[in-house]
Structures are given as C-alpha cells and as structure tokens.
Amino acid sequence: MNRARRNLLKGILLVAASSLLPRASEAVKALEKASLGDCESYYYEPWVLKAKDKIAYYQALGLTEKVGNKVIVKNPLLPDKCMTYTKPYKQDHYELPPPGADENYASKCIRCSLCYTACSNMGYGVLRLKGFEENPAEAGVPVAFDLYNHPCELCMECVKVCPTDALAKIKPEEVKMGIALIDPDLCWAWNSGDCESCASACPRGAEVFEFTYNEWGKHTRVKPEECNGCGLCMRACPVPGAAIHVLPRDEYERRTKNFKNTGMTYEEYIKLIFDAEFNDPYKATIRSSMNADYLINVRKAKRPTPGL
Amino acid sequence: MIEKLKRWIRGAPPRGKWTLARRTLQILILLGFALQLPIYFYAIKPTFHGNVTCSMPLEGSLASSRVFCEIPMFDPWAFVELWGSAHHVILQTVIGVAVVVTLYSILGRFFCGWVCPMDLLFSLFEKKLSLPRDSYHMRYHEASTKEKIVPIISMVAFFLLSVYFSIPFYTTISPIAGTTKFFDELVAIAMGLPGAALGTAVAYGTFMTVALIVNIIAEKVFKVKRFWCKYVCPVGNLYGFIMNKYSPFRIKVEDVTKCTRCNLCSMVCPMNIDVYGQYVASMRDVKDYRCFHCGRCVEVCPSGVIKLGFRFRK
Image 1 (tube, one colour):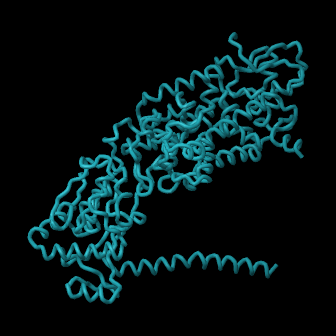
Image 2 (image 1 turned 180 degrees about the vertical axis):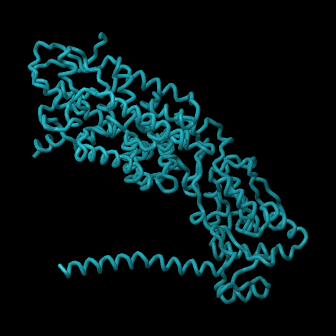
Image 3 (image 1 turned 45 degrees about the horizontal axis):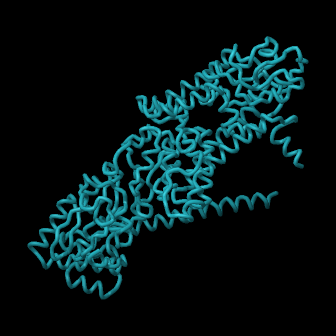
C-alpha cells in the first residue's frame, strides 16, 4: 500500500516536471527574442548575419548593428532602423471571412455547413468550419483558413447556396475577404526584378495592380479599394512564404499605419524608396542588391522567368 | 448473441415494422448527410476533371439543407432564432421554411421520431418499458400545465439568448444538426479534405455528447425520461405544440371494442403519453404534443386497436 502510494506520488511529480519543461524552454526562447529588441516583432523578422564574409561585407558598407550577440543588417534608407522582412505565410496567417460576408455575419449564420459542402465539392477546399478555438459562440461559422495553399477562385458557389443572408448575393468583383499587402523589401519587382506573377495570377489583373517601371525593377502595387483578397497572388509568388500577404482589413490598417515599425505609413515608405531611386542611386542600388542577397540566400527564392 | 444485441438496440419484442422503418429512415438520413462530401472525390474527380455544384441527394445539415439539389429546407426554429439574432426577418429563408412547415403540417411531430439522429442515440440508453413502481416522470401520465409550460419557457429563453448574444443560440449548440455535421466532419477527416479540422469535429462531438449525457443523467439519476426531447429542445416542441394539433398523420384509434385494457400502449411510450387512459378509453385520436408518431404503441398492441396513418376528420 505504502509503495503504491509512493509510486503514485512519483508519477505525479514526473508528470508535473515534464509539463513544466517545455514552458521553461519557451521562457528561454522568449528571453532570446527579447534580446533582438525592436527589430523582431510578431510579424517581422530581421536578417541575422551568420557567415563571417557576409558580416565583413556589410560591415564595410556600414550597415551592421550588434544586438546582443547577434549581428543584424540595418536599413540603408533609414540608418537608425534595422531591416525587417515579413515572415513566411505559415507564421503570419489569418482566418478570413468567406466571400459575401460582412462584419457580423456570425449573427446571420445558422451553421448549416452548406457553403462548406459546396466549396469542397467544387474541389477548392477554401472554407473550414470554426471550432472552439477563438470564440466558442462562433462554432460552426465558415472561415477561409489558408488562402496560401487553398486560394479562393471566386466561383461564388458558397454565396449561391447560403440559405440566409450571411453570405450576401454579390458579384465576384465586389468580394472583400481581405486586402493584399506587398512587402517592398521582399518582392522581386521592388528589388531589380522583372516579376509580375501576382498580377498575372490575379483574376482581375490590371484592375487591381499598378506598376512603375525604372532601373530597379517593375514596382508592383495593389489598389486596396479594388483587391478582393482571394489569395491567388500568394500561391503565384516565387518567394517562399510569399512577399504578398492577404490580411484582414483591421490588420491591414494597423500594418500600413506603422509599416515595419518605422513610424511611417506604407505610402511614405514607398515614397522613401522612390525618392532614393530618383535622387540617390547609390543607396537604391545597395538596397536592392542587399534585398536580392536576402531573397536568394536566406529565403532561397528563385528568380522568376522574365516576360512571364 | 444477435437476439441479445437486437434486444439491447430496441428493447423487448415485438419489434414491428414501424420501428424498423423509422430506424432505416434515421440511418439513411444520417448517412446521407455524412457522405455528402466523398462523392466528388471518389466518383467524379477521377473520371473527368470538372467541378460539381451538387453531388448528393442530401446536402447541408438538419439546420438547413438542399434535397435533390433543388428543394431548399430550413428549420423553422432556426428561422425564429435568426429573426432574434439578426433583428429582422431574412426573406430569402421563407421558401425553405414554407417547405418544412408544409411537410410537417401533414406529418405532425414526425421529425423527432423519424428524422432526428438524437432519437437514435437516446433510445440506445433508455429504459424501454415503464413499470408501476417507476417515478412519476418515468411513468405514463397526462401532461400537467406545469409540464407544458417548461418547454415554452425554454423556447423563450433560447430566443432571448439569441437576441442577447446575437447568434442563433440553440441552432449553434443544437445536437440535432451537430450530430449530422459531426459524422460529416469525421468522414471528411478520414478522407483528408483540406477544410476538415479536428477542432470542428470536437466542437460538434461536444454538442452531441452533452445532450446525450444530460439526457442519460436526467433519466438514471433524476428519473425524468427523455428530458432533452420533452423540456429542452425547442425544435421538436415547436412541431409538437403547433403541428400536432391539426396534422392528419397520427396514431388513430380504430376499434375500441377489441381493447383488452392491457395498458401496454401506455407502458412502452417513450414520451410517457397515457395512450390508454387519455385517448383510447375516450375514443379520441392521439393528438398529444409529445407524440412523435414512433408507432411503438401500434406495434405492441396485441388486438389491433390503434393504427398509425392518415385521418382528416376529428
């Protein structure tokens, strides 16, 4: 009896210790993260230099900064900030409302799963029914869960079968699932590339995208009021983890207001790049070659075939 | 062994044609909803690379469905709750509601006994025969006014909760639609569909299991038979209170002179209706709000006094 009790106590202690272990490692990770300071936030990652020749190269250019015991590249256009890149879509994804849904579509949805069936039967698999994860009151409400791997083709079949007004009967052009945001430091077209994969994948093409041509690439921009947020551009992007991310509207506004934690809006940041390209070609060349280095050697992106 | 299993599934013999018929219908409907997804992936996609807008005779769930790709169906209680949660009547649902209301105006509270998958689950665990020593809520009795008010209170409560949280409350937590969606989701997970998630299946499984456990605890601990169907579920009670009053499909009392007053019909009733004392003795058809036309009393009657069928008079 005594031995059994002792064994039981031992078991309880073991289970408690094993449950504490991963938490301890998490805490260590959090400490490591904190050492990178402002540069690493939850949706941007800095470029940590590891190879010695790379460190020497960027040191010669005067673009390195030591944070803790790690060497980070600075932004050539903003000398007091570090360069950050949008994280791969896997670490930076959001659940988006399905086509035709407005803000409070959960109050009109009766959780009948007709849209989910229609989407699966069409072979797209965009929609998923929510469980208890975020809000238990919204269990059974459809969401577009992973537009990177399963983008919406805007067939509008879910809208047609919806028995209530939760998914309003609208045309494919009026769909507002989210807004695509291009990271100009991660995009080929902003860094001496000739890429228009996203624009050619977009079902509405030139209606949504606009271009500025110069020596530093075919600069692509999304018109936020036109974008449907279908996610076809993300799958087409040659950068691993996509340089263009479809975000929910509130998240889009939050990011564009303070783009990359620089205190500038998205428009101002783009204007800064354009200014450098027209007035200071030396800086612009350094910027684009440095980003291309990151794209090729860190993200392992393949250069898109020209004239796509 | 098989005889033992059969007895466990549906109590003491005789197991008549009505029980077999309604179990078949319940299982067919549950299978129809569960297998609404695979057809595309196993039959259509390998043969030609096209998209299908409709694949199965049953699509959706018991909250709202498309039957044979064309006929819309919409749960009337979901319509009521949607009115509360969206703060206005959504007109495009009216056709689906009209189809269901017309159907059950003919068939009465047919839904609970013949369609609802929860009846299938509840009957696995409940006592099949009420005995003289059982408590009041386990035995047959005439529904008192208090007993009739409880489901109405729950209906009002669910409506107010829908207004307060601005979600269709019972439709969200409903084990009826939840069970069909649970099996649908399990099939989808087994097939590895992109949209299938374990979290969704867990949510629906929870709704189903909570109703089942509440019902079992009410019966085994508090001695209240079919607690969920009688007092909680507003879907069935809506049909019971409104449609059962005038529907032509009912338990009809044919020939009272043959009655031997064995009282078996009252004892086997899963909803505790006093079939003999309240209806057969006074030669009235069973129009009780609790009756869901399961036909147990018809099967069990040794002298053929009562029949299940259509009658427009009375």
